[in-house]
Image 1 (cartoon, rainbow, N blue to C red):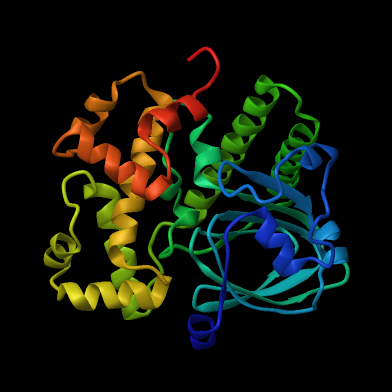
Image 2 (cartoon, one colour):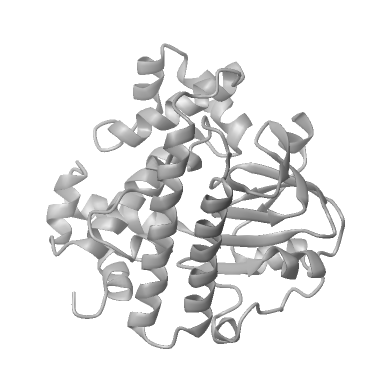
Length: 321
């Protein structure tokens, strides 16, 4: 919907989320949340029930936002009407829906009897769990050219609700490093189980995707496959048989970000994963990512993260790694 492209606010972290949507921005959904920095902008997860969010909503409807993190919502009772990307959906009980990172989104209506779970998290939180795990962008329900929801059977709804509830309990009761690792593991289980259900229901891309959205989806898919070899927007424009300026303008119109940002984000995500999940030297990682040398890789990483590769590794490695 065009109004979303012209008037939206960026929501980058849980603090921004609460400021945008809740009448009590400092509210914590569990005791453990009180111990976290309220404006933390990376490595976060927050989970709440829809009943809690509905009670704290400061408006009945919310205009366009662009969430800079991943969102999963399970609806077990009631109904909601929301716009995700270019489609407006009315979801009923037994629906699990998704808002990918950088997707446009608006809330039009939540019924009074709404129940379920709402979970948001960023890529850094996901990266800290397992070595050699699936990348977030490879999950089909977080791809912009795929359906943003699945309808669940009663058995599936109960199973997924149980996982959300366990994730919430473990998150709110965590005290040690191993407790936090368990939360990340439950998040991974939830994503894997969701993927199984999604793939059993969806085999093809959305055939009704508008032309510009198709181009952006194709560009993102190519970036996910070739980011280590092709680092220029012009390289992808050749593969897509379009003008580089047109590609960049289209990506920026649809996503709010230049095309180059998706290439850089993919490189940074891969670098973070290797720094956290492997014992390779910084120089080896630079070679693996096809940077000219370690120095250039270091400057690139610091420009996009604010810290050096070594500082990031020391700040995020698991104990005992």
